Image 1: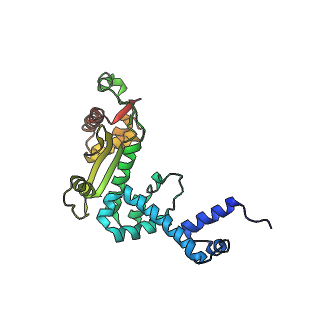
Image 2: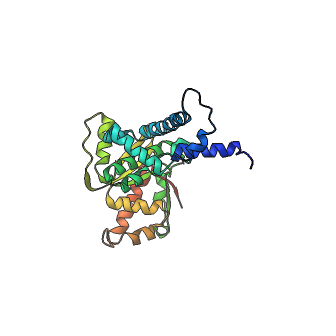
Image 3: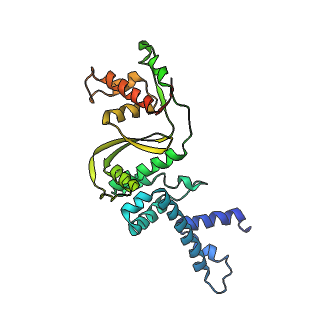
Length: 256
């Protein structure tokens, strides 16, 4: 049987770092004089996880503040076991953290992680030219029903059931942060502006309208989907007002 290739050993070492598997086979390949092979491997594995935890602490600094060092480290170790790094860039490391925290019963902390992940996306999302308000004003009435829009790539819609936004804002202001607690639904837009990402409160119906538009639905489809939020007579005006606000706030980059 031929000896394993370098690529095979690299794959084995990656599996050991991520899952702790194959330690015996790797140890047999290490010439250890003063330090046992298993100890030397553990140094690499611990350093690997420490580096990944530092990345998560940087990307989710408010979550770290809310949990404290000990609980943050414990939870991130569990997250990394469930979602080992698979991307060439550490930028993507925390992509599943909000959903994973929610599955652990940490709903308020999941809200905070979702907010911070949206912030990260707002920082480095692609740019796009914004829609001129005059274009919307010139739209013929008969074309409204089939209108669809494209929201800016940096925009994320959030629907939080906690005071995570208040916690984040207090931390940004250098004020005392409240304890994370459940709350009534809190709808927000997080989007990049000239001064950086901004967090803006919106109503529940505005969130519903924008979510439909973000999926590429036409105004007619959006209106049909809002039955239950308002009366049929009120819905067209609410959709038009939400769309006008989105364009005026520089959230829309195209009209189709």
